[in-house]
Amino acid sequence: MCGILGLFDPKGPPPTSRTFASALERLKLRGPDDSGAWQDECVVLGHRRLAIVDLTPTGHQPMESSDARYVIVFNGEIYNHGELRPRLKLRGNWRGTSDTETLLEAYRTWGVECLQHINGMFAFAIWDRTERTLFVARDRMGVKPLYYYDRHGRFGFGSRPGALSMLLDDGALAIDPEALRVYLELGFIPAPLSFQRDIRKLPAGHYLLVNSRGVRRVRYWDFRSIKPDLGMSCRPEGELVEELDALIQSAVKLRLMSDVPLGAYLSGGVDSALVVAAMKAAGVRHPKTFTIAFKEQAYDEGPAAAKTAAHLGVDHVHETVDVNSLLGLLPTYIQEYDEPFADSSAFPTMAVTRLARRHVTVALTGDGADELFGGYHYYPLIDRLAPLLQWRARTKRSAARFFSVLPSHRAKLLAGALQSPDSVALFHFLRGVGKDYPPLVNADILESTADSESWFAQYAAGFAMDLTAAETAMRLDAGLTLPDLFLQKVDVATMAFSLEARCPMTDYRLVEWAMRLPLQFKLRNGETKYLMKKVLSKYLPADCVYRPKMGFAVPLAQWLRGPLRTWAQELVHDDTLMSRVPLDKARVRRLVRQQTAGERESHPFLWSVLMLLCFVQIHGAGRALPALAYREVA
Image (tube, rainbow, N blue to C red; front, side, top):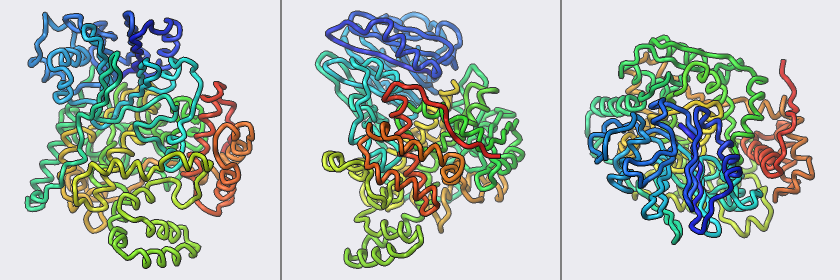
């Protein structure tokens, strides 16, 4: 796990060593163990290393290939690199045991086709000294981030936009208006958008070829068109249970590759329990697992995690945190998420990472299973609402008017959902944070940019035909929400404490199998993750498997009415700060009043605004975050 940075300018020369070194230092937490840079007349490559595999100097980066033609900087892990080594045409002997060397020689052997041979999480760049070409790639599911810019013939890339922006000519923050609009509607920014106008995100499953003629982007892997295999419905259920169990075990076993201590996050849910069970099946006798417990019972998965840990026989470590402990992480949250980011579950993710880092350097997580196997509460809801989309437009309008005047918050949401013309629009309404609130951006941005629903529709255009509404929702989540919200959250939260997170459920073999699995094995009679729960039932009793899903949430609504109330009000009433973002001040301030007065639960939407203001406050103006004025809770 590392941080990478680079610049290609065919006109030369690269930036001054001081500028590049400062930008690379911005990635230090991603790689505190080692640092390196390499350059020639038109390229400079930088690397920060968190040593996981091959802890010796032979794993140092940037690294040259055996024939000295290629130079690589690499962030991530290639889990099957040991299987690849005998197939590669190496010149001489292997210098070390790192997967970086394996990946470099795979590219030397197969070129861009190396991506079809590797299984891992990665963002890397390889410079070809002969062809004067830069090859930049991101893993299939977007576990590792990769940002880039192409400006005035100069190309730059990096693990984080904060470091990359330091290489821009002026370094000033220029907000991308479309990214701003989409962010405020969704709470995250889908690739290829980035909050900064001159910077883009490389989408998952893509690579770039960069030379003096320009930049070419290519998709090399795509799960969207895989059709559900109805023949699987005719197979014995027990056979599918065993097949899924074997896939999960294989994915987990590959991710045990490490030369440093390794553990796993364990909540009271299905996904992390399956990962830990697979670790034991792979021969890890007493995996070390980590849980954050909360004093608020409604958010506390500590008892359920402890019960799961006892049944699985693991070395379980837990820590109970309170509101003040989590809010103490807010400055780190704002500093490390160096573009606006509105998922408040980053708080407990950082807290459990801080706990785990005291014991291990690598932790396995269950991220990805919900999107693949139907774990979110809104999938059954979409399944039930989908038939209403077939009503005549006049009938839907009448029903929507009726529900919209009812005082219930759920009734108003149903009124909004009934106005959806298709399953993509329905998913967008239920998944977005803006819901039926009026837009917060000004009229100029509304007229000149596309809304987030159009981004969903564009992505869904590549889907297999005749998917159900719930299947459409899962694929939209897997392709957009997962990489650019949840995996982004995990990557930044873990790197803030120099810990590597691995996500077995994002293994591309498991993803492709899940796309073929018919809906009846994901949702059945309102039950989510039907088949996964059958697999987990092999290892845990029913009361550990069939329990309500809690998620990894924090009591954000209560915070905004309590300890964060004054802080939120001061932010939105800072006229100097508000003048720097193209938002409707009156609407933003009304949003705060509604939430703090308890008139309506708008906390996801409001949190998106507050995180935007915090970002602009410290990143846009180059100012340090002021002392956080929150009221401590007894």
